[in-house]
Image 1 (cartoon, rainbow, N blue to C red):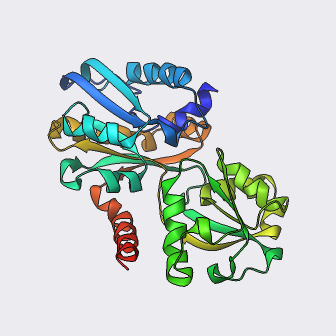
Image 2 (cartoon, rainbow, N blue to C red):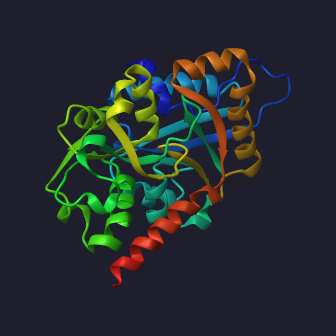
Length: 294
């Protein structure tokens, strides 16, 4: 169980050697994590255990006197804490960040890429036998969606609204939510649903395990996303230390040992995550707002 947790903690830098130079000093480091984006995979107890392990390694690079890690059930509470300077670092789904945070208060961070090396991407899938050739053919079909995934719903609605002038809940004959992404694929594969929204990463991994999935399921549409959660710093956080943290995180990609760890955690690489990477989600938000004004 602990091993699976690390896919959500890999953004924490890891040190393999003790550096002779004096380490930067930080009195307190406050981290906020949006918990619903991972609660289908990890319990709060296991999450806290894993965080403690990573923080001990983290202190090899930065002289941190105290670290506070907070899990938030509601993005509004995370926003309030961030605005009150109670958080130095936030980790949350990118669309929720765009919808709830002032982007001027964010600074570049980092994120992890998928185990396949390809973008996670949100994809709309359908059974090849369902006679659905495009999104305009989904009327009265059976839909399956991931639970606690705002992007999946918003992206789907952005495609449906221009055609049906209705949200997904009024277009499909049934709408069923599942806590785990692989359950979406199973529902389609066993003909229990006609359309599903999930990560391309999940689909690719399941195809590797069972190539027959690709014979029965095809992609209708996709939306670019490099990771389920993006990590950003507060704009008032120490810039030298921020850059040091990012640099240490990226060093994971340069060591043989770190590559083994990344593979075990179902991750490929750690990449920089600039605030500009939120642009696709800003455009999606603006697109949906234009439909609300009609």
